Amino acid sequence: MMAARLLRRALPVLRQTRCYAEAASGAPQMSFTFASPTQVYFKEASVKQVDVPTLTGAFGILPAHVPTLQVLRPGVVTVFNEDGSSAKYFVSSGSVTVNADSSVQLLAEEAFPLDQLDIAFATASQEARCYTVSSNGGSQLFVLKRLSKAVQAARANLEKAQADLAGTTDEAARAEVQISIEANEAIVKALE
Image (cartoon, rainbow, N blue to C red; front, top):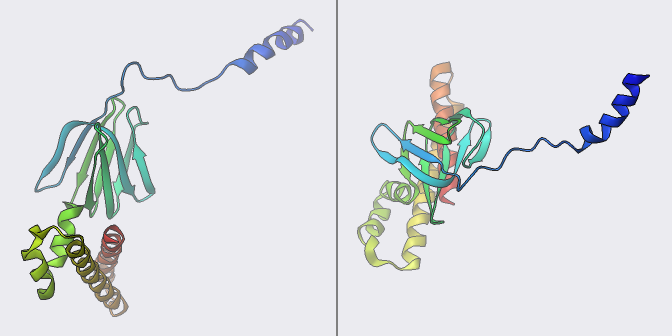
């Protein structure tokens, strides 16, 4: 009986207890490192947010994010700087690590700034090279034509990979073609 009375008195107090995360003191900071085998894009830079594509889905990383380790899938990584500007990079694969101290390491097998990716695809065809040579013209029409050629080249690579998949019987070769399809689908999506 005494225990029941004590529980009744304590119940309203228990209902009022909330378990939300504590607000970070001061301005939250996130240390971001992003590199590929050929280049370091960010080294312990202070950034506002990073959006990454992973095998379990795309997600955004903010300061004080829960620690995690994820495998990257082909797609676009967007980095939001403290001043509000953003930079986009295409990654083929890799890993992202979020640590308890708000530091983030993104290691990619291959990474290219998105604005360089369309130039790489545009130079794949002879007709598009004409646009690339005069790239300093600056007209909006020129940019649209160059992107259109880049998307066409990416779609051609995707179609070729899909045709190769139909004709492949070896498991290892089939896996390589499937990776090519996933990467080309992500490139087409990034450029559109």
